Image 1 (cartoon, rainbow, N blue to C red):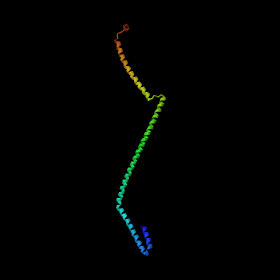
Image 2: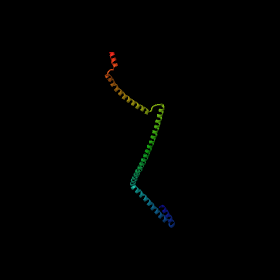
Image 3: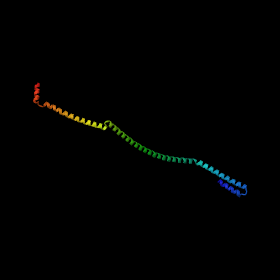
Image 4: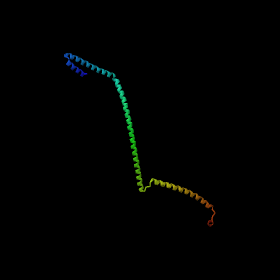
Amino acid sequence: MVKKLKAMAEKQKKHASASGLFDSALAGQVKESAQQIWLAGMGAFAKAQAEGKQVFDALVKEGATLQKKTQSAAEEKFGEVTSKMTSMADDVTAKAGQHWDKLESIFEERTAKALKKLGVPSSKDVQALKDRIDALTAQLATRSKGAAKKAAPAKTAAKRAPRTRAAKKSAHSAA
């Protein structure tokens, strides 16, 4: 607007014959234009003051909405990252467990091999011996019961049996 006024002033300088008339008309237009600018500024300030609280509240409301959206998006991403990390940790744990089991079996095999070379019986050998001892013990128990039953009737039968001649002679000669 100021540029327009300057352009008009230059035109009027060229076309106007009286310089005093030009100065007063130009000064009036500048004064009127400045007054309008001043009033527009005052109006904007008054409007901002009157609507400022409403605008501020609207901005706060929009900010809260934006914060909620941002927070929910961040929580969603955090959940995804957490699940991925948990999955990776489970995979690593499983692989480590497999390696640990493999190392344990290798250790057991080598230990068993070394003990076998030294002549130390394995747990299977000891268990086989225990089973064999239990079986032999059971056999002895059944045989000793059978022998005891056979021995008891033989003694009573000897008492009841008639004496032979030799037994009778020895019994008479002893008497």
